[in-house]
Length: 275
Image 1 (cartoon, one colour):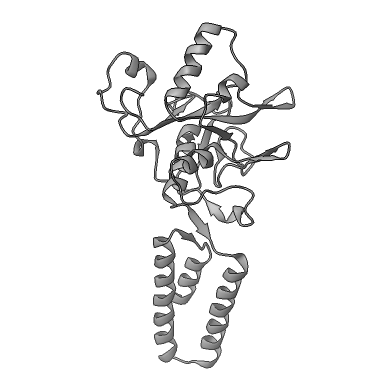
Image 2 (cartoon, rainbow, N blue to C red; image 1 turned 30 degrees about the vertical axis):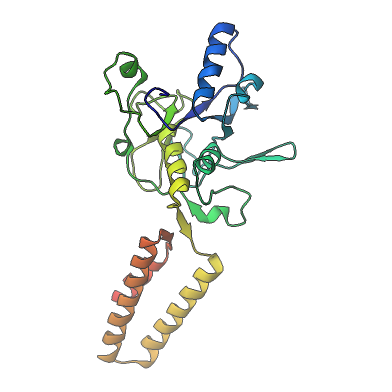
């Protein structure tokens, strides 16, 4: 990767401890210092106990940064979970540790990153670009066998996931690292979700939601206008008003879409006006 002039490396898994092979460890630690390298911090659940895995101190000295990998999940499905918001940070003592995606995006020049310290953290949504086919990916086996063109990694930040094939087995069997997004029905591997979170923050194109109070004010105005039209205006004037406000609602929806603003209850208003 250094030879091909990759920009950096993100590991979408944890390195809880060294493996006891000193020569191999020294080689790996040195490799991590050749490019800006980032690794994850996550909880490992076993026998009802959650243990926080933090990178080994020797590895930390060679890293550009590290951060959390875990997402807040929704629903009761234990096998395929839904990643909707950005990874949450944690406190290690008095020090706040943000997500790995946030740390890496800030390192590579992001103007703003999303952390769970923000008051409106729950109003920021991951902006999925599509299924895994949207990303350029290769297996390490193909790289080692020189089946990949020489400059494939040039000028890219490389994300290295634990798995590359989401059809390989169930999420439970492979550590639960299969996720549904709210925007498609095919499960994605965690590596693709982490890549999405990183690119979202690098380019500031995540999805935002309006302040709930402001949403309520907009809806209240639309409802009051609707009540007035139903009670006071008769045909054919009410038809004209319905067309006008349908157009206004549609225009607002489209404008919000262009600026990555999520207003989930605005389109139902459009249907009401049409009705």
